[in-house]
Length: 330
Ligand code: ADP
Image: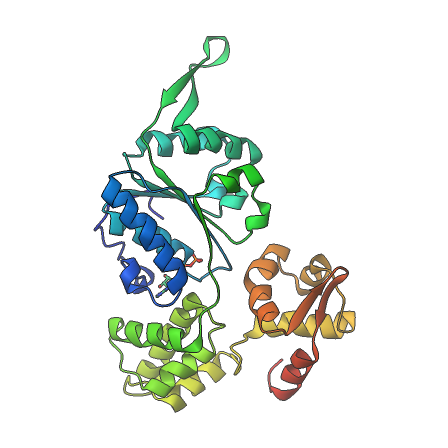
């Protein structure tokens, strides 16, 4: 990913970027969040001031990065992007902070992955727009306190609980992104089908949406698969029947669960007698990373009540048992 993007760059080299909304007005759903953001964006523009810092949290694929890229475009300011794993020491952050133009946006994805020392370094940068930098090395090293341009930090995290309270408190707005309705996803699928140059029946768009785990990123990926399927197997037009056939071929069931989702549920059933089972043990049995399960698999299963969390671990629900029994795949 590029470190520095200018407004109007298009961000559009591949399809992922092409499908990403270019302004908040293009975004579907999340209306309450968008309304609040619109207010602070308008106010910042009217007062000619930098926008306050904003934190987005929620499961992957729900639009955190999309909001973070649309806001600077709507403001007409420059944008820099980095992520928690890339910032392992204050010195990794310095170039971004010293490069930041007045009122520009610095987006840090997976901000919960920055180490404590970096968090502390960020406090003063966010609050006073001042940072300490070390010049020289060894015995010649000296620290100077540098004024930086007032900028806006946008953070995104799947685990807001992992941020320290002082860091969380330095965000003016903290917005939680929730799952999308099937109708919202169908609107995204319909629009993106056009962008991808494929025609699709309304019921087919809704079918793809229902099988997309209430997540725009998943809906886009499913749509791209269905488009390829339509091109290869038919004349390129997507009907309901064709969409279903394409989903079947990927073993995506009627609830939108894929092999990994069902593997998680059936592991708890098969190996742990339905639970309670600890996430580490489940991950180990599945040969998967616990973080992947917690961030990408569990949120939708929890929300649809296929699994519940108890103090002693995860437990599958009767609804999950019925679902696993009713479908033909493992
Ligand atoms: P996150 O940063 O939360 O993981 P992204 O912002 O990268 O999620 O969203 C993944 C993709 O889903 C985006 O590239 C975009 O195409 C699509 N998307 C997300 N939110 C919306 C939305 N509100 N309206 C339309 N498309 C969206």
